[in-house]
Image (cartoon, rainbow, N blue to C red; front, side, top):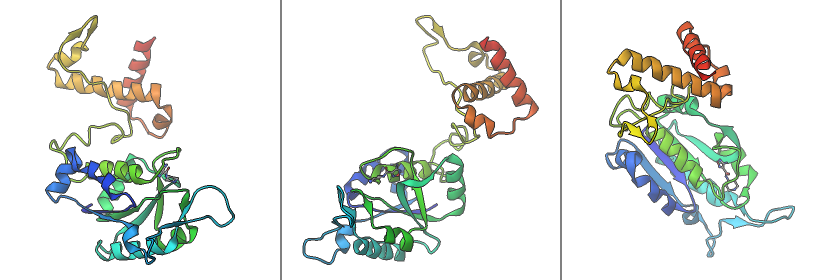
Length: 246
Ligand code: 4GS
């Protein structure tokens, strides 16, 4: 993944991407971020991008022409394999596994973000390759969804994270939830750091962390656990966790 593009009526919102891990990846040209505003591809004197919905009802609908022209222009400067993604609650809910695959296989993505009630359906039919959703809720615009996906994608680009291990160690990278983390002080009121973490025994620490990941996934997200085929050691660790709970 090297080139990410966004079509948005509010490009200033994407200033938020110039911080932290994503900010550093952009600054060092590890990834390119390009923004286009459909307002710049309007033909009328009023620079109109939205119009009333056929059939009536509240709100406005984003017009076909400014979006179609912006997409055509944007794709000219994106790599040929670029896929155009429309963000909406009608889209496929994207998870970590999907993103891992996309970062592996795709060199670029172009996100179209909507405002108002929606966009002219014919634009989706003619110019959109895939529709993605951030989740089953309604945002006031697709911009935060695009930024969330861009953040999640950029941190997977090799070299974006300082520590090569930190992406692979996160929640979901192995299909499980994260294990608990602790830092100093060793004791807070009556709560002590689990003693194994102070033992210096790396094998025991790894075992404990794996057990916690399995146990927490069992407790909080049994749906995720059901999708996994656990090996014998994992089964044993999960059983230990369950027994210790009782
Ligand atoms: C989402 C979502 C979203 C839908 C944009 C109504 C404004 C809004 N986009 N995942 N119009 N959920 N978009 O709610 O991606």
